[in-house]
Length: 123
Image 1 (cartoon, rainbow, N blue to C red):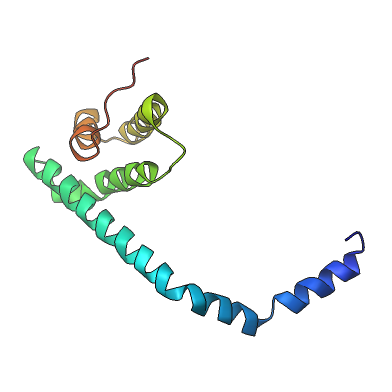
Image 2 (cartoon, rainbow, N blue to C red):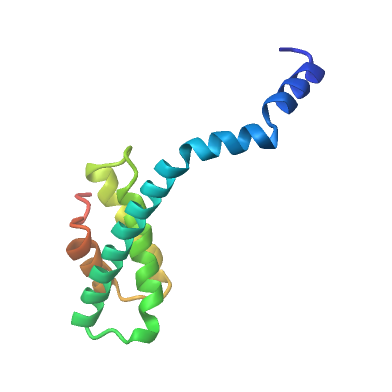
């Protein structure tokens, strides 16, 4: 379609609130199931991170940045396109990022290895 007017008319016809509502209603149950599964998995991961932090005597006032590191690693594990050495390197980049923000590299490495079973990259 080379005519911008026709494109806009076609978009207006298909982007009505009623049509959007129907599409979302049809997918809502599946979307809710996936969200609940993801939140269950993420909460379990956060519990494991807290366990690592407790074992190492980290004060609860600085849990949030460590949990954010864990959430970013968790998000990385959910990407289907990354694995192996590339995955380990991406995890190392996150570790370096958070250690440059003042977190302990040893504790970050413990979270990476104990919670996510990700080793050091073999540079």
